[in-house]
Image (cartoon, rainbow, N blue to C red; front, side, top):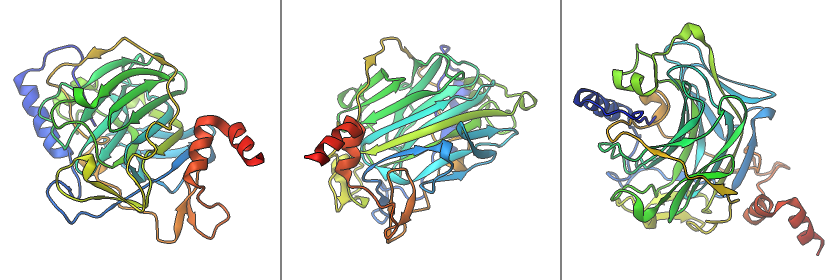
Length: 362
């Protein structure tokens, strides 16, 4: 969970409170910056398109209080009472890539809908929607768990984000990060423009869900203020709805390994594959927005959705002898629904089924 102030300076007391929150909530089970024996990250190594209107998939695991339910609209993340923080986390990682989340943000004072990409060494890219304001999305990035300077967030336009489904995109390469709303790029961060040693560049897990930043019984005063709470749970329940997610890994292989403790992308080895080989193959946005507002320099808190328990890395992996399908299901390799080759996945995504059909007819 990251948060930023809303156009007002933070007091020293609030800044101190936020530093304590950051320390408590930024967590990884094994940090490759300090250990050379961390387990390898299971690689997606392909592109998947998950339609949650058809139900759950085993490539994303549920955690946190509250409920994740499935229906004709997709996956619904419901916050009903104090402590609720329902989320889905991928069992895989991507090493550079593209995440497209089609969703409706949750309404309600202090309610936060969140999309987070986070690595084991606590690199992070995120988007967050505050239930008290349906006109914007907050974008941010962090590197290597360094959260003392909270000057990287922006408010970007996302009109009527609680009224209907909008596709939000994070497109991440070694050279730049683009955040998009409905096909329009609202923010771009070039590698050279990031704070020193703060550009996210290590394998990322994908997480999304909802939580009550305005819960006065569990959160610090600064968190409640940022979330524009307090949250009145009797006004709920409050729900974020995710229709689908498309995840494209710009690298290939079976797993990603940190070969040293630098945290640099050049130190990441793609086992049986190549890092960044498919960068730039994802669909491109159709326009670029100019309106954005920098946040206050002292307000933000990493990472995850709602509590320190929700920021752990994925404990599940793809079992030996099983494969990922294009719809995000993990199945035995002997199943009829086998993993399609990387080329056909990317060709279909970029050029459409018509183009692939022409290739097959030749």
